Length: 241
Image (cartoon, rainbow, N blue to C red; front, top):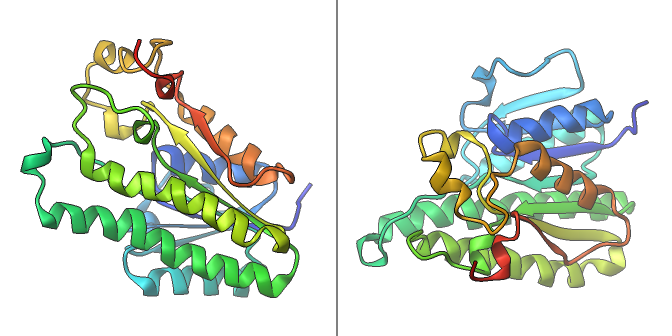
């Protein structure tokens, strides 16, 4: 049965994003999904209440266009999932300022553009809403050998703004949360050693995409949870193992 609600999902062409699109559709949501070339994706059922929009989320025009389509086609924005992200590792001294700008454009500026549009629309609707952002357990617990200092500036910033916005919009019933994964079985890790990837959490496992998706769905629907950073990381945020 349709819940007649609409969710906007960024970085939606593969991995966690594609899993989010499928699960929200299965639950009766209308979905507006975006990535740079999502219109070329062949894995989506176009028969459902689904709009696919190409665009770079670092460009403010993309968020404007996506939000406009959501309202024109489906009448509302009830949830936003900031899933799009850039991640690559280097020793700190080898990162360039161009690397930092690339990380910031997607991970931070994209978050700001899409969240502003979504929250403005939720305020107009006066029916509350949900924002969930994908961050990283490495913000809490760096792992020796995983040199991700610059990406973690951005992901740690997302954890921080999640809490600030949760408080700022609590009285409007707009909830703001984050899901913080460890190693997830996505195309990002397709070429990595499975044994090495399993060593990056105390449980010694790799998280399935659906586990992250389920965490996002839970926070989207949990009407009493805001300002939460939910770790779905096989214990990686706990410390040394």
